[in-house]
Image (cartoon, helix red, strand yellow):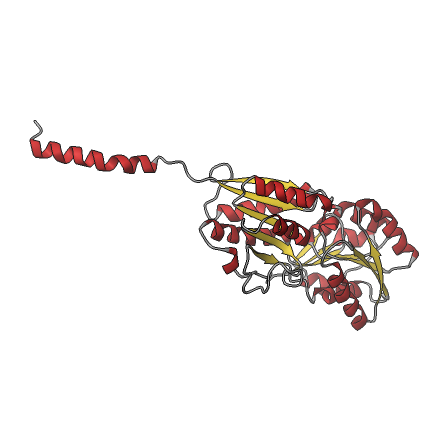
Length: 328
């Protein structure tokens, strides 16, 4: 039989435990992550797997404690401001913005929601942040750090085609960093004794004409500036290059996996995984202003041997040994 003291103790424990049990039963916070992409949705299939894997490492699981809001412009860049506004209205907790155009649209749409930029060419030069070390506002993230890589890419083409004297450069002139990329490529070409043929492409429908111009101008190869448009049209570009018998070098490995010849640069998948770290810190209370913009530290060199054979090219063994990935 329970005595009076035991009864009071039992009741007290029950009363104290009640709010703890109620607290334990509270549903876990579900964070809303917005993603703004200028390119076609198919471009992001693999990189989103990398992003989810990165977030999973911090304990975030889609459908459990995070949900995604996706907005893809499908190469129609004029849609970006409206899509960015939609993400703001969706009450996203964080917006991931891919490429310079995506980051610019997101920054113009909100000054309060944290923005994590991914693959932006020149965050300081484009005015997103005053410095990489001290972003200062509501935007931070991962820079492409493409400076100096143009010379490396042209040198790779020269190794594959030793007598190369004229290289066509495929550029999207609507890109905020297109001029900077082209100036660096021009300087690199001069140092290698190579002439440059600039070919501008603003939309997918212009690619066929662009390759006709390259062939007519007798370009010995072509280099592609970094831009979401050229990622979206990776298969069309690869097919046109093979048909035109033109060796190529790209900024992204996805273009080589689609049939391009070579690429040298940071991988987009790695950058999205890196962005997961920023998302985690921000959701845990960090401010973008206090998170330095990071630059890639690893640059992958990828060669497609199947494409080389189709073009009748022999890749020097020394080049194959230096490659991070060889596609056969």
